[in-house]
Image (tube, rainbow, N blue to C red; front, top):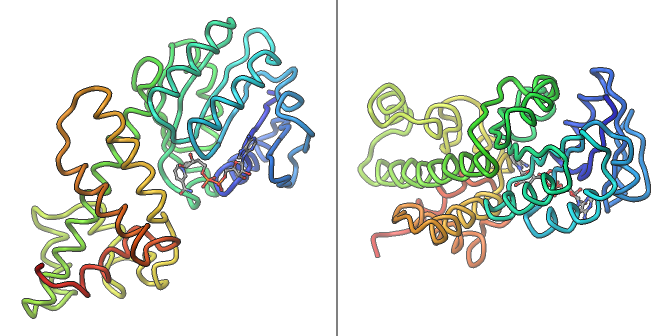
Length: 290
Ligand code: NAD
């Protein structure tokens, strides 16, 4: 296939590189002028999409996605599919899908989980929203860039799945960190705490696979002085998206709300910016009951 790839950042660059390795021709555009080996760098977003069978976007947020969509949709070829892999608000995902389908093109929102490591290894999980035809056209590319793709439903369903998942992740990380901080104050050894919880009903991905306590459990950002990994500000972005969606759908999400305000405080007023989202543990460690 000929593929246009827009947004060659931490995630986009390794994803585009994997498409090249699989033998596809990739034309790439990034406003920061990033170059990726094997990807033909072009001057504008429209140049990247002209003649492409598939266009992939991997951008920071919904406003940028909408602006890029305005530029590229008129330049896309008949029958092509626009695959947005960014994490954005459900409303932007649906608006871009409407615009794409209105132009007679195929559209899939396909945010990912698996982080930079998954992007490099080609082991991302894609959660996709769009028509059967659009998903079928995108599926071979998901297979190259990832290990699993779930077709979640119509346009926006992929973003809905992503933010619900990440709301659970944010809440669970906080619960895991505050439990470790409580265990410390109760004089419980962290390794013992891990040994019990990781095989008991408190187990979770944040405890078992991404333990926030240094030197405990598998290797994680905690063992690297909380260098991300998944930065606290990205967690905050996703939690805010979850609360924006909850507002627009009139859903009651009290735990999501508390997690959002804790990460907000952490990123904006404490030392959370640029640290991994599991650095909530040293934050709780320092605090008392008040
Ligand atoms: P990033 O900031 O490294 O990359 C975004 C890229 O988009 C940058 O290189 C930037 O220059 C480029 N860009 C911005 N505006 C543009 C425009 N108008 N045209 C072309 N390029 C433009 O971010 P990232 O970590 O690669 O994340 C990308 C998306 O993936 C985000 O939506 C993020 O939430 C999501 N995500 C990230 C991770 C992760 O672990 N980093 C995991 C899952 C999902």
